[in-house]
Structures are given as C-alpha cells and as structure tokens.
Image (tube, rainbow, N blue to C red; front, side, top):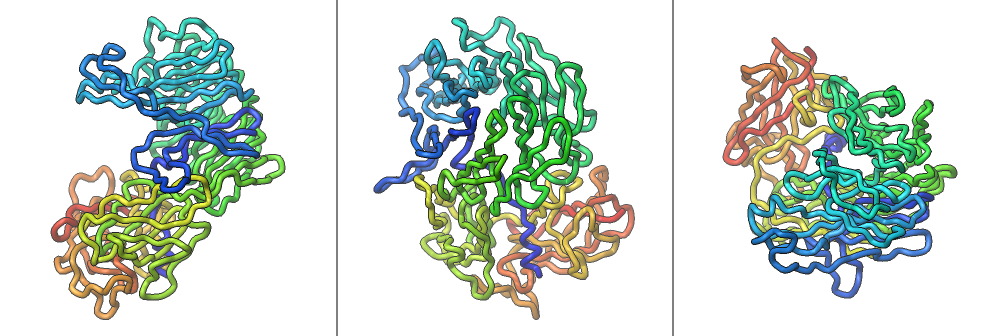
Length: 591
C-alpha cells in the first residue's frame, strides 16, 4: 500500500532537449528546436550544445537550419571590451499560415564580465519574405500572415524595447518612443494578429496596437497567463490564475467591447498552453483533469471541453494548426505525434528520444528521483527484494555500479544510488532510443550527502505556496489533502529523504526493518505554524524518525497535529543532525 502512496511524489519541469514546437497553417509540416546531435558513428550530444532547427512532415525528417559559432571582431556593434559571437544558438521557430515565411531566434555569447549585462544577445531572422531575408534585433513572434513581427526581448538584463515591426517595410528600426513590455516566449502560441495587434500578459491583458497600449484588467485576485489571439485581432483567450484558490480557468476577451467570459471553469486541474485557431472558433489547451496532461478542445461560442488525446505517457507540449484541424505534440514517451482532430487519427512522426531534465545529481546511498521523458514505453515498479538493477529496459549506473531500481515510467526513474560509489563519480541513465537523435543521459556529479527534504504530493497545493508534503493519515486510510485533511491531535506519517544516519541501515536494495525499526541516531525535532498568518511557532511532537519500515531508503517522520488554533494547513520545520537541518513541509488540517 505504501508503494501506491509514494506514487504521489511530484514531477519536475524544466527544459527538454526537443522544444519550441511550431507548425504551418494546414498542419502538414512541423518545426522544432533541439540541442541534440544526430546519430552517426561516434556521435555524442555534449552538454551546452547550441540549438538547431529541424523540420518534419509525413515524408521526411531533416535538419532545417544550423549555424556554426564564430567569434566576431572585438568592438562589434560598438560594445568595446566585449567578445561576441554570431547569433548561432537557434530556437523559437515560427511559420506563417501559408508556410512560406519562417522566423527563427538566434542567441549569441558575450564575454566581458558585468559589461555583458547591457549587451543585446538575441536576433530574429525571417526568411521567405517578398524582399528576401530580414534580421531584426531581439526575439520576435510572427503573425499568421507573415507580415508582422512582435519584438519582445533583446536578451539584455533590461529586456529592451517591445514593439511591432512591419516586415514588408523598408524601415525595421525600433520606434522613437520605446515601450518596455516584458513578455515571456510565446512557445508556439500566436500572440500577433494579421493587422499587427498583439496580446501580452501582464497582471491583466495588455493590447498593443498602433504603438499604443491598452490595459484590460481581468481579476482583482489573480493574473492573466499565456494569452493567444485570433488572426483578425478580435478575440484573446488566456489562462486566469487565482492567487487565493490557486485554481486556473480558461477565459475569453472580446476586444471590440471588452466583454469577458469563462470557457473552462476554475478547478484544481492544471490548465495551460491555450492556442487559438485563426478564425477564433476553437481553442486547444493542456489539462491534467483526467490524470496525466492531455489535450482538450473547446469552442469559443460555448459548449463543453472535449478531450482529444489519450496519450498513456501524457502530453509534454503541443501546437495547433491555424485551420484548427491538426495538432502536433511531444509525448511523455519522448515521441513526436501528428493528430487529425476530426478523425482522431494519430501518427508517430519521430521515434522515442529519452531526455533528462533538471540537475539529476544522485545522492550516494540515498533515494533518488530522475525526471525526463522517453525513459520507457510503460511504467513498472519493482515487485521483490533485493531491488532489480534493471527495470523496463532502464538502468542507472553511478561510478560504473548498477543502482537498485524502485520504479520506472516514461517520465521518472526512482532508484538508490549505490553506497559503494565514490564521491563525485559520474552517473549515466541507460535507456533505448528509436529516434535519429543521440540522447543526452549523463547525470550531474554525484553527491555523498544532502539536506533532508520531504517528498511532495503534487495533487495537494499548499496554503503556504507550492505543494504539500506527502502525508498519510494515522490509520493508513489515505493520503492527506485539502479534501481529506488531518484532524487535531491526529498522528500523521510524513515521508522524505536524508533525515540522518540510522542505527540499523540495510544493504543496498533491501527494505528497512520493521521490528525494531531503524531510527535516526539523532532524533528529529519540529516546530509548526498553524496558518500562513501565524508568527509564533508551536512545538510539534515527533513520535518516530527513521527509515520507513518495508521501504528502501525512504524516511518516515510521525508527528502529532496540535489541537488548538488550527488553520487549514500546518507548516512544519524540522531539524536533525549534520546536513539535514531546517527542512520544511506542510499538509492540510481541519480547522
């Protein structure tokens, strides 16, 4: 039963090695960026490699654009004392509705210490225009008709001007009056209409039109995220995040009269990455309402959302064609798919590419979780002890020693880093790939120890921000959440890692003993805050601190909830021996 509870540990999010997906208006062709090398004898995918742009359709896969890194002469662009490269690191492809115009953002490197903070490092190259190739300083987002480019960031610390440039014009310089509008990369969303109108997320929605900005408020208790606009510049769809409930909803704004309406009502499910068809009639978005993130479609004139993907590994990112008929998406299995929304037909266009995300630095002798995509095609959990050294075709070595594996899924590997590994020794994930890329699966340098931390339950947002700790009720009847809170005086079982040395440590791959249990040599002590507004902590009784009986290198901490002055959440700060000081966790309680 505990193994099932531990499946609630949260996943991580970071940059993948296949990213910035874009498509043509009819969805026949997709573009994306990657820092991976193509497979060839002896090929590797070194860390820090520059991005390149790839193109794929029903018939072929090809490298579309790459640039070798070249250092420019000192003093280039008037930045004396700085050493600059060309704009060789490519990302953020966008393509016009007719497929003729393609925009790509390039980044250059700057050497020169603090002086580099003022150097613009981004440039957008646009090809396929009637007047040939155009280069514009800053990162840009393209309109569907390929005429307008919204420049939103120049790569310097200040971000530079934000403005709209007419790519058909002979003048591509910024306007005399500069607008400072910081906007996040659209990531495939269309934010520029065919008349040059731009929708930007601020606390509300900023509408940039004819070099003027109109701010549209959306909520007194939330903020607008990820806006997208239709081709005619009439409709904006965005995600509204409510700070109090921490829920998200999908909202529609009509620019003609400022009317707003709700397309998808707020609830605990994550809603993200909305994309609007060119005619403004259909919205595609991501939601985990059914479990793993899946694609949903909702009409802007009303109606219920419809789930259109049922990807067993979940959807990582997606892009909608301008005609609203085709979607391309990267799955948690590390594959690229093309889906016809009318028929539901799904076709694989790129094979599985295992990818790591985050630091993934293993802690020697401890529980570790490595995150990514494409590790396997299915999920598997170890069924016996000692734990296997390979599971679902996946293994992890640290210092050349195979690690005991607890579980494998397409996006996560749980394992115990070998106790015999040398400090700082390299680690490697081994997983098969079926794509033309060479996967980058080297782990960061191993650590011998780390501070204590609680495992998180990403199904339970914390009232203190972030996610609650993984907490089980006293009678083991379920996981504690806002809908199943702990009671005053109840004993709660918390789970985590690295609470300190124990008196009876089992061999690698074997579960902790139950009778007697393995206790920490130095008892863990905890203080608690009964609400985000409380200033004075109370002592939290700790009844047990040690390895969780029956589990491998997972720690258990049994604490008793106070009886008086409870809010809707309890935050605990616990302290043990050595490195494991001041680790925090919260869980829901009944006031």
